[in-house]
Structure formats: structure tokens, C-alpha cells
Length: 208
Image (cartoon, rainbow, N blue to C red):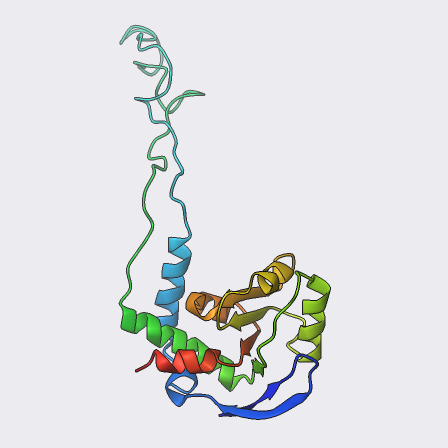
């Protein structure tokens, strides 16, 4: 698949790039995408939720009343879960949600996601550019020039650029990452993919 490299003003630079079939033309594996997205979302969880059970709430351990003859159910402690302020039964406790996934499965999922974007003609290649200062309006103008779309846009840079990142930080529908940070969830969660020229070569080099 060949794509023209665009300038930041939206015009063609005259250069064309060929997307590697091993990255952007694989047979998509939906299950691999599912596993990778589930793992990514699970790894974002803190797992710090905690409630107190009956051994932890601050109440007296004195028995409320005699065992028999009270005319009602027997109770031994105010810490029981049936009382207001009592301990919670089977409440959440701190835990680790992180899971592992084989590297080959993660790579297959990532390439499958990129293939879907290529099939949808949702990939745009733009010339490398820099910003002298963080300017949100300037970044929005660049995206408008290259017709990246007005929905979720994922911009992938070859290397970190603080000014470009800061320019996008206030835009809910624009996410800027480096090629080292690219992941299946970010790709699938975007409607269009903007690759700065050179990113496709880095991705191709990691197949070998």
C-alpha cells in the first residue's frame, strides 16, 4: 500500500512511502486484539479499593443480649454486617490486576490493529515537523490541513517532542504518543491515525 507524504499545510510533498505488508497488511486476528486490549485496561487499574470487615470496624465486642428468650434473632456483636456501620461481607481488598501476555501475541494484535486502519484508509503520513512553543491552535490547524478528521486522532511521533505533546494535552479528541508508546488500545480507540514520516520504518524494523 502506497501513501503520499503530506506537508503540514496539507499539500503533497512529492514523496511516497510504501507501508510494509508485514505490519499494515497482515491477516487481522480479532482475538489477539481482544486479549491485548483487556490486558492494557487491566494494567491501568490501581487495585487499591478496600473496605473493612467485621474484624476491623471499631465497635464493642460486648454481646447485645442473651442468647435465648429475647423473642428475636440471636446477635453476638454490633460488628455484624446486618447492622448499620457493621463490617462488610466479601468487600474489595487491595489486589494486583496486572496480567501477562506473550510478546508475539501483543505484536500480532498491534499489527492487526494497524492493518484495520490501513484497510479503512484511516492512515495519514505527514512530514516531520517541530513546534517552537506549545500552541494548541497551531496543532489544530495542522490536523485540519491534512484532513485528519474531527473525531479521535492518534498522532505518532518518531521521538518525543514536548511542545507537540503539550499542544495536544488540552484536546480531548487528540492523543500524541511516540512510536515506543504505541499500543493496540490506542490504535483501536482512534478514528484516524497520523504517522510522522519515519514511524512506519521503525515499526517495520521491529518485525525482523
